[in-house]
Length: 126
Image (cartoon, one colour):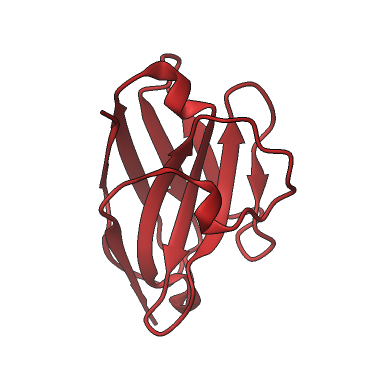
């Protein structure tokens, strides 16, 4: 079984920073693609950033230059460093993983990802 557990959410003033973590357990092949998504109240889930097992990270235009996705060397923990947060970043953030190769371009639809965490809430107030 594959399990993803996020942490690090909270409330922060606009301009502040948070670092989200996602611990992944299960077979290694499940982590071929790892990503962060977010869903604000009343909105669809959207891709924030993704990082393939071998390759370069890719970001949504709305977070470029402010967010950084990374993972530890073993690929067991996925991170999302969020700087200069804005009220529009308020959402529940989810980490996700996929095992199979995917040829589509970013942003990926959420349905592409097989494994999901339970989410961690981020609130940015002005």
